[in-house]
Length: 403
Image 1 (cartoon, rainbow, N blue to C red):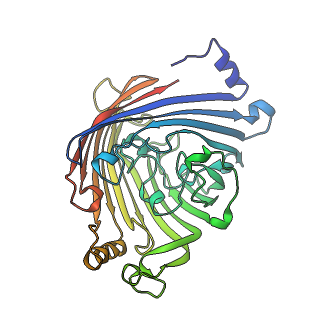
Image 2 (cartoon, rainbow, N blue to C red):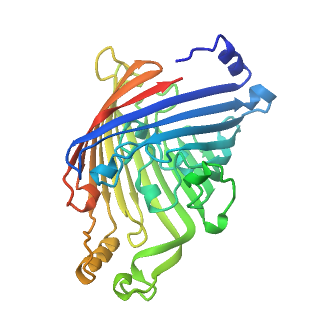
Image 3 (cartoon, rainbow, N blue to C red):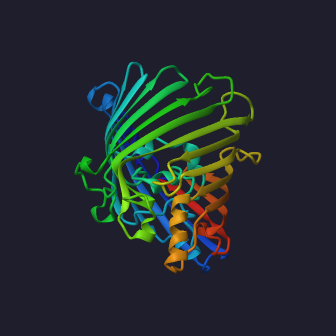
């Protein structure tokens, strides 16, 4: 949008320094369903700087990256009464410092290493295809990952390191280790909590991926197939049992605890139809991802989302993207047992939570290279998992600028 700054941007890029700034905002409302009808607005503005230290200082393959953001607005889920926010850019409504890391390529880019402040969600359980959707249940990372445990995602960074090794052009493995402090992203610190609190847990992650036909000269249609697992060494509490194995709701004893929690995720995406043959990204792609974790320690032991994405669906609108997504999140049955005990034996006005479903239909209109409008319709079924809140329809749009 702001051009080349009278040549200054090109000169900076030649010396290795590049900038990118974006401003994205959502205007969404629920004319049907939910607890009450309301319209919400939220925005996210980000600034990223990257320094190519090979150009700037002659250090081959080394990059330095720093970024920050500013968010504001409200969460429509507060009025609907559902669990998965309709807007993926809601969260951390403040100015926040984000990334600060070094990244090194070695062995002709067969090995890549990153160290500094960033998040597990940047490299694990992620895909650019998730960003197509407006709902927070898909966009960024499957929302079950950060709900179940301190699996940090944007915009909350922590100290960490990750290494990626390409075994072939199409097969690679990624390993990561991060500080697992669950409070590192608290709003009061604005992202400036640079302390290392490994006594509160460390998260270890491993992902294996197969990416056929993703090389520049590939003739077939591209795809990505990933399987990952993670382990957090912090302290976790059972959702049903007390320290003696009974119902903590009935006995009043402290909940059973243990050191360590884990989970797995599986992702697949595959282009099914491509317009105009090899060398173009226009066409239809299908994707799906699921996460699984132990039910007695995790809020969402099973989570699944999938979608269809078509770039260039309308003739002469080659950069537009049409998408439909489906999300299913299943609450823990161990938590449901605790809720049942609270209702039946303690008389609490509470309902058991079972599942929530979100359907997301959107069309991203790329008006210029730096401005898009993305009308969106969502339908939320079984809000908050109880079935006691009317299913809700969300309508609105996302708007985005790249400066």
